[in-house]
Image 1 (tube, rainbow, N blue to C red):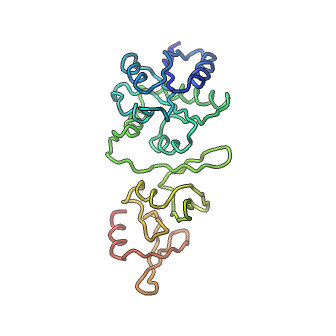
Image 2: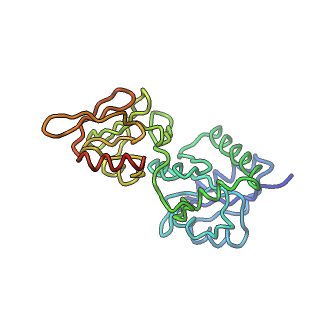
Image 3: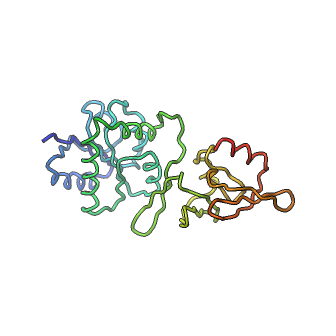
Length: 255
């Protein structure tokens, strides 16, 4: 049996010990060691080239994302993020990271994650998507952009991930936004300004202070009072547009 050579990286000793204890029950996992800092882990990765990494995101001096940015592309391992801070889930999953364990996690959830890693590593010689995803996460995207491809929605007991291509429109609600996907509306704790900066401007357009639309979702533009227009989406929803018509027409040519 080929062992999955694994490294545990977390600044909390008890967290490292629990992962190591759980991994002892997995016969095909070989734990190379435990690291308490990103710098220490980087040295081990460069020396031993592990297959799998359990990586805490929030660490002093060098966090998990910064550490990955320093790993040579040829040595990028499969990564399972482990952290108590769920706001990092969005950044992890938008680049198709292997998995994300939110502390505290159950034994069943941990075993599910290990099985997912096992399945991915079994096809890794023929699958370059993981390396490309981690390159993107580390700021080395082959396509040269870092726009969102997924949006995370936290619900009781789970986090849902939505492909941005499926989003019809986004409307502001203070420090929250309402994200319309088909007939479903999801509430996300974020501001419309922050989301606008992370969405591909060739696919999404801010039509007013309170609304962003997917350009593919626009059916027609109707004249409105005082030179303004109403955006009609394919699902029938109507939104008032306060941006100039010429600007919108220009954006639509790129959709």
